[in-house]
Figure 1: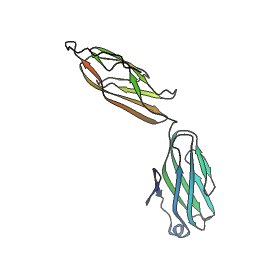
Figure 2: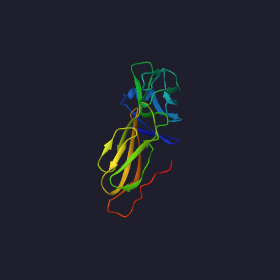
Figure 3: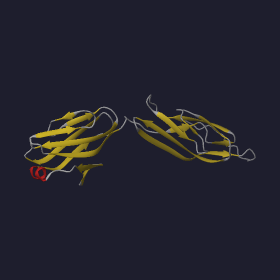
Length: 204
């Protein structure tokens, strides 16, 4: 059985495990929600438990190796990642009910993809220097220059050898999250025979 709980700007999905009929009579999790603000690590989440029945034991598993016996706990995720949260309620007998919800996402702080280049047009072959606007020691960089060639350098230099108009895409991956920045038709390369000579510096 799937319940979809809507929070402001969020959607949290719950999945109920199979329960015995006795457990269904004794325990009922009407709704369990969470409030998330902001979405970057460290991320503090307030959980609300609306379980009903003869409940003696409540246990939250936050998916990061920590648990809580509080009824409505507040928990902070200090590291970026994706976490599955489980709530277990029990009547004190062998019967218990588990509700799992997926997904709490804590992103790396302020990760974004963006870049600039020193030239946007000119005659082939044209050497272009790309500069990433985002810097972090844990970040991994990937570039698609639009001409079938790529680079994993942070600030690569690329030579366009053929006339054409090229879209450049940058991907930045950090702590399992990837951000993308695509600049369509960014580079225009002319043939040597062209009368155009628009090679110019792009102001900062």
